Image 1 (cartoon, rainbow, N blue to C red):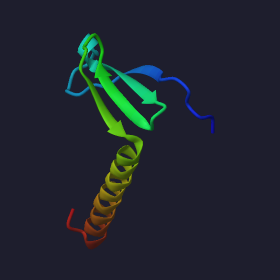
Image 2: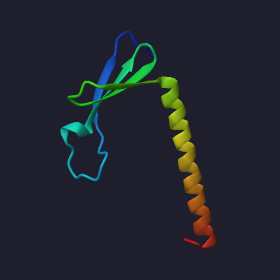
Image 3: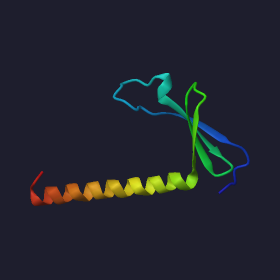
Length: 83
């Protein structure tokens, strides 16, 4: 993998509520920094939230585990006929 020498920014849309169309504030800018941090910023806003990449990785693993437990519990309910 290539080492980062300068920040890399990408823009994406996140629909955080039940809207059909995205608004300006639904767009976020994700920035990868060379010091192994990641930044999240709302479009047209100044405030940026930083997290170390290790924390993001750990959160992804924990969320994956929660999803697996949820899926297995649902499979057990269906198998027992309680769903």
